[in-house]
Length: 296
Length: 296
Image (cartoon, rainbow over all chains, first blue to last red):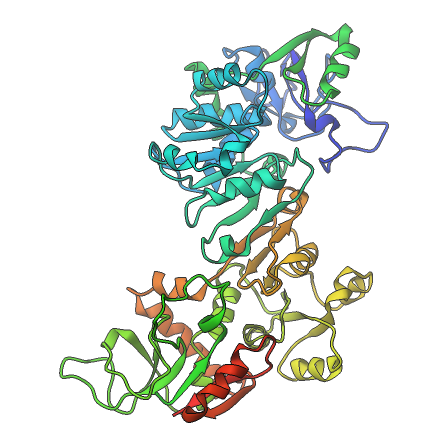
C-alpha cells in the first residue's frame, strides 16, 4: 500500500458491514503493483490500484491479491486523491448521476455539505454546471468554512436554521428549486431538505449522522410526488462487479476532474504507519475535521 | 348522471384540491350520453361515461360537457361498479402496475385493506396471481371482515399488531416477502409495512388516514434500498390527458375484470337524489363503512 485511509466506514456502528472480530481492518487506500502473476492481463508493475470492494484490508504495507480484487488508476494524480477516491467521490458521483437527470443550471441541495461526500458533490456538480445549496450546522468558523466551500464551487452555503426561514425565497430567485436533495444527516434536517424539493424531485439518503429516521409528510409523497431513496456505494460496487465498464467509466471521469484541478481530496492528515495509534485515536473522535491517511 | 358518488376526496381537508367556495361538488360518478354534438366522434347517444378529471361536478342530473371531459365505459357492467370506477380501482391498478414489476407468486402488503382502494388492490392482485397481505385495525367484527376480504381474494388478513410479532415469520413461509407495500395510513403503520419489504422493494403512499408522516429508518434506505414513493390518481390522469391510450387500456382491463366477476364495487348505499342531505351526512361521518351513491 502507498496510502491507506482510516475511514468512518471502518468504525461506525451505524454501518452494517462491520466484520466479526478478530478482523482485517481498512476499506480504502491506494497501492502500487510491485509484481504481477503470469496470467494477469489488466495490470502491470508500477500501476496504482484501489480496492474493488469493501473489506480488502488496506491497513498493511504489502499484500498478495487476485487481479479482480483491485482496479487501476492513473498514477499521475495526487496520492491523497487516489487514497480517498473509492468511497466518498464515488458516492457523490453516483448520487449525482443515477437518481435525477441533472442539466447545467439545475440545483442540488445537500446537508452535511462539509463531509467528504459533501465536498465531492460540490466539486462534481460545479464541473457539470449544476448549482449546489449547501447546508451546514452553525459553528464559530462558519464564514471561513463557507468561503472554503465556495472556493471549491459551492453556489450557496447556508446554516441549517435558514432552511426554515423566509429568506429561502430570496435564494430561489437566483437558482431553480432543487431536483435532488442529498441527505447525510436524517431527522429534521432531512425533512427540511425535502420541503424545498421541486415537484417530482428525489431525496437520496447516504448517511444518518443525526441517528434519527427520515420523516416524510404524506402530502409530499402524494401531492409533490417526491421520491425518497437511499444509496450505498458498497452495494453499487457489488451490483456492478461483473461489469467493469461502469466502475471504469466513473473512475476515468473522476480522475479526469482531479487532473484538471476540479476535484481535490478532502482535508487529510498524513501519518506515518508507526504512528497508527495516534491516527486511530483522531479518526475515532466524532466530528474530526481531517481524514487520517497512513502513508507507507 | 346515472349514479354519483359522495367520496372522501369531496370532503377531506387532507386532500389538496378542495375548490374555493362556492363550488360545484362531485368528482366521481357515471353518466349516460343523451345527445352528442355534430363534431363528436368518440361518443354516441346511450354511451356510459365517467369524468376524465377531478372536479367535473357529478352531483347533478344533467350537464352539457365537452367531448374531452369524459371517457366511455361499456354499459353492461353494474351501475355501482361504473359509478365507483374512476378513483379507487384506478388508484389500485396504477399502484400495482407502475412501481414494481409484479409476477404471479409475488407478494404485496397493504394497510387500510378494507378501504375502497384496498378492496380493489385485493381483487386486481388476485386476478394477476399476486399474493396480498392485508392489514386492518382490530375490531369486534374482525373475523367477519377477514372472511369477506378472503372471499374476494385476500391471501392473508392480519391485525395491525401482528406486524410487530414473530408470527410474521410463519406467514413468510407461505409467501415471499413483499416487493411492494401500499400505504393508506402513514405513521407507525407505514413504518411497520416497510420493515417487512424485500430488499429493493417499494412503499407507495396514497393516503394518510392516521394524519401522521411516514417515518423511514435510514438503514432501510441505505442498506435495504427501499424506495419510498407516493401516488395520486388525479395527477396521473392529468399527466396522461394528452394520451388517451393509457387511460383507455386501464379502463378496458378493469371493466374486463368486472365483467368476469373478478372486481366488484365496494359496499355502497344507493340513495335517491332527493335524500342527498342524509347521504351527505353519512358520507362525512368518519370510518363510514359504505360509499354513498346518489341514484338519478
